[in-house]
Image (cartoon, rainbow, N blue to C red; front, side, top):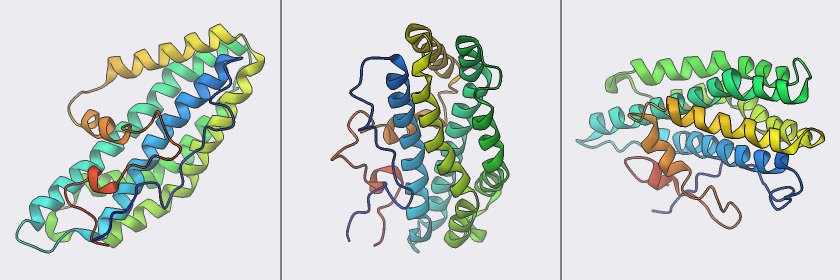
Length: 221
């Protein structure tokens, strides 16, 4: 049985073009956000890869329940991230830039993937083991993956472009965002998931996170 890495089918975001540039906080913020977005992408990839490979054994029902809980954790983590962006981070960026609606495109992108994301989350929440279909999981992901992954990439470019505004105020805005995330973390479902998918977030190049580590069973590939 070979291992399958959680950096596909949805490719990660490279930080090479800007991560080593310390001339403005916008590049630091873009780097940190790219790492967070790569955590989201790794989680999504691990779900997509694992979905059709639940072993057909006596533990199947328990494994399905665990896997669906994992899917719900990923959903909670992503919702938590985007809610904090819209309520804390984006308004702060508007204040720093003095440009009303500067982050509106990113909010519109949130709305674009939300219907498909909600359907996926509902399936993960309500599906019973006897009705589970790996192909269904994949089809639900495919329905929202394109607008989601486009957003995750576009937002990094938006943040890089903040280098025309006050560097320290941009850094402070991001710190408020981080504090908000920590203050509102439920600490029950999503944190164990995020602890694993951020395992290699500080060193993207040449490091991979194996999907085997992100679910109850190894991928049967």
